[in-house]
Image (cartoon, rainbow, N blue to C red):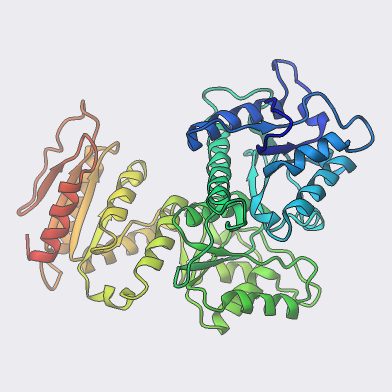
Length: 480
């Protein structure tokens, strides 16, 4: 990672040396390993050698940032801060961040990226003025609500989450570098390295979240920006309720959508807004007439949420209780279909039924037909009565039914088809399509069950475009 004195660096990595002490079982420190992985992935992504600098030799000494370090920061195009308690207690780490901001100017946040190796509270990040930069958490809560870190004592090849986060970081840094180079060294990127929005582009206001949803919020932000969607955020820290509401209204101006992620955790109360900022956000969006999407984990048992305000939010009609990957695609679809959303009620509707083990297959079909049909997936949580009612409603009202036969059992698929056959005689008109998508493993026997007019799509090598086109064509063409 050495470089000639006059050269520039792609990335300056700022960190506390106590965070790079090799632990037993590791040959190198955590930050050294991260820097090496980032440098190699960034080089692959850029197609040319990308040079990263970090202080391997403790040039800062024990007390201050040296002139040499200042020069390295000044010649760096992006800045990665490895945020931890040690970083917060280091005056020279803070000084490096300050130097980079002074060097880059008012657009510094567009080229600063924060790697979190510990759960740092919102107020502390606000005090560091890093609330509007790209954040990449390398920690998580385990099932016992204890904090764990990825890559400890060293990353393992089977630890996909560690490498996934490194790749996400490299992707966003690469985008920032490419835009920086295209502009001849001038600013031209938005937060976390996404291109600035052009006039007429789509934009989303992404709500503040409770601490347990920060990882999902960051994933959604990156997903939207990679899809060329502008993302607007607003922090409530240090603001009164009136000031925060004014900031939200300003963000809503010209935005296409407001997106809020919810959990059982109740949001922090504001001094003059005891209902918390989540309820304040939702009320402000509703009063200003902006289209809104909410998400909650489909496994969340709402009956166990004691807070009445939080329970109400979780049960809003705009809440999508679906897997998070499905919700991310739903946000894009909501933006893409904004002008035709009112026409969707007239589009043929298809119900894609699948056992829990086959939801990923169902979600792929859902995504592939979503721009051509009104599509629905089964509920994955709720009381047995709620699940049964939802299933019956979809079977009775859909224009087409697809049942996925994948990793689930033959018996389950046959029961779903028998249930349809039972309800079919009560329908006002027959379905346009009754189909089974056979995406089972190769050694799985055929379903061995058929109903009049039923089609079977052989998809054991994956869902192909021909299958999707046939489904959509038949749905738009007439009865099966």
